[in-house]
Image 1: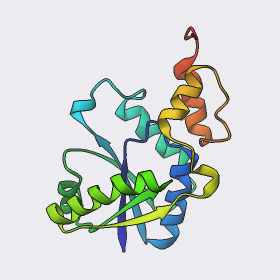
Image 2: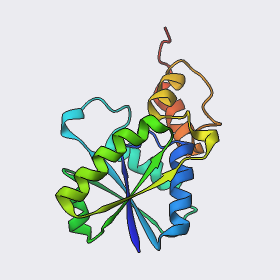
Image 3: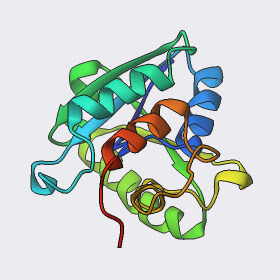
Length: 163
């Protein structure tokens, strides 16, 4: 079976990598899909191209992974790719409530199933938004993101005046 792991990945974290690595052991192939939301234009730290480059570097060691991007409804992408399984990571109960709604909508709209993989406890507090905030203040994020993300964050915030 083949699955799709969608997200904004701005940037990819160690929690994402944990879920992705475990999904790559379960599924024959996992397609990481960087979703582009036109309504969020200008709200991402990294461009779509930068996020895809970071993902390429961070996942180079995983042989059954591919990276793609899509703008539109995830269910439309699923149909285009002839995929019926979405992989989503869960960190806490609060994630579950939101993800459950999305999973039900995706099933209703596109007849696709969602498989939830619980992030390892050590990553349950890590989110891309928190990583971006820590990095913006010059904090060390090397323990909570892949090297590719840490390097990209360092470059992105180089020379930025900190509050």
